[in-house]
Image 1 (cartoon, rainbow, N blue to C red):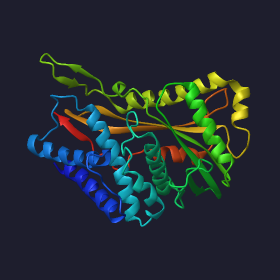
Image 2 (image 1 turned 135 degrees about the vertical axis):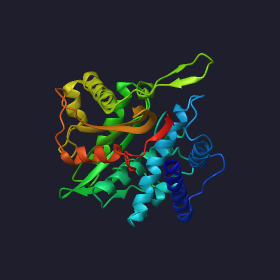
Image 3 (image 1 turned 90 degrees about the vertical axis):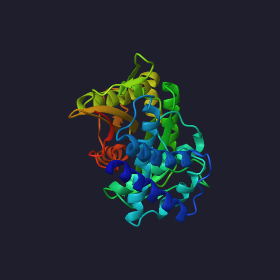
Image 4 (image 1 turned 180 degrees about the vertical axis):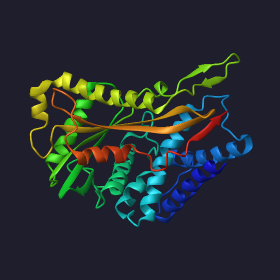
Length: 323
């Protein structure tokens, strides 16, 4: 049960960092629930050896892996001595949902979780990161600033929980205006999608006695196109909705090229040498909003998308389900 203990070690170290920085972990909060859930995972693994399949474990497992990804990024950044710019956002986790899968429960505070996650990823990839003060934010500056290729990049982070192209268009336009009003040399809008159908990657059915039986038949060639196609479809819907003339109005300046980064996170089930395992899965697409075709014109944005979407813990850490 080495894996479960390593996950608990991440959660414990994360909790120690929060307490050191004066972050409150309130009773019955989503933050406390996420921390306790990891400990419960270890207890179940030690008692049973594998995760029970008698109930629908998918929602809990998705949230655990999403939380652990954020927690591990915080632990790694702290170990590198660069946690300072992120401490104000850590304090907001008291009232936020630390898990980025599923509908947000505390919209405003959870949006700050996205800023924290994006900033941590940018720090890992580029360094020299600044986050807008969450207590004085008025929406007029980029949420995340970092340096790359000799320029100061500004990223406006947006979270979308519906399938509406109108809502997505509005969020992109808001993000473009944030960057254009700032002192950043160049930037873009990063959108985190929370309306993805997670059952596409991990389905379930009822057994003969009513128990929940989860599938374990995916592979890498199966999940990645599903997630990438989803992101590309959502952006193409914006193009279809507004048309090329309106896109030119939304992206009026060279400071914000017609490009948006999209991120989606989920958890999928796999067969690995006769064992059922689950892994956190995430995809990042750099979408050129030209109205003509998909394009990826900026390597910095591609790197940012990969950094935000990739696991901070190794792919070799699957979660054991059954044999």
